[in-house]
Amino acid sequence: MVKCVVVGTVAFDSIKTPFGSVEKTLGGSATYASIAASLFSKPGIVSVVGKDFPEEGMKLLQGKGIDTKGIEKAEGKTFSWKGKYGLDINVAKTLQTDLNVLLKFQPKLQGEYKKAEFLLLGNIDPELQLKALEQMKKTKLAIADTMNYWIENKREKVLEVVEKADICLMNDAEARQLFKTPNLVEAAKEILKRNSDLAIIKKGEHGSLLCTELGCFVAPAYPLENVVDPTGCGDSFAGALIGFLAREGKVNEDLMRKAIIYGSVVASFNAEGMALERLKELGTDDINKRFNEFKEIVRF
Image 1 (cartoon, rainbow, N blue to C red):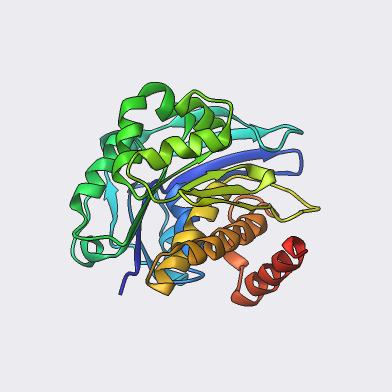
Image 2: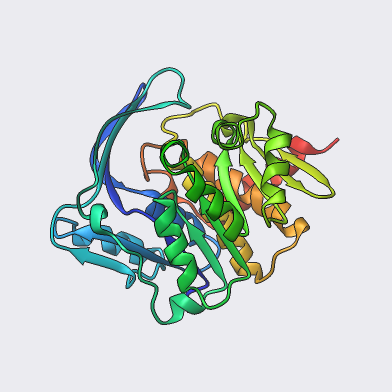
């Protein structure tokens, strides 16, 4: 039975970094997030692909225990993205985006998907995120991701998502942009004012910030020596976070702190390989070993 639902993109990515390159490889927010979530519990994907999407892509997802019946196959080509990174590996330069079948995508949640208690909305159009939220029967936790493009072009809708989802994930630049403040604690307080018990702000190589009405928790990033490709790290973080919580079947601040560390662990592995190269090989022993290393990093 599906424990969590991931709504987002399944795509072809072409990526170039100073350390390698790939062409038309499997990518997309829902792909990274669902594979990360599958390390902890059973996810289902809601997305759309074109007739050009290879059966090997579906088999890879299914081989991870991911339910793919929510992936619609439409006439046309699959969404594709092409980008490159310079020496500042945190900043991607988009070279080309072809929305293709994503232009007409309307998320449809059916059967057991509607009854899932944990929902992750990838950084798609906030109007689509709201439509997906409306279809859920009852959730213990709904997390929505966003990005600067939607903040620039549909700010009011993004704020509506912040209001209606339990947690709206964003990185530090997006939080400053959305709430028009240079201070991340102030931005987190703005999130909490909008019907949220928890605010999580991702800070890339500097970790993440969790805030509640009672205070803040700061999680470091794992100190990597070998960063190859950061594509999908934010999605991997979100997927591992919701996958862990879905496994636990409940949400509280203590579990959320653990979930953030698991998210950071999985994202750190993802950054060590091109595209999905490292993520798709990851196992429980790898995760637990690095989780315990995290404990030593923050112990004093």
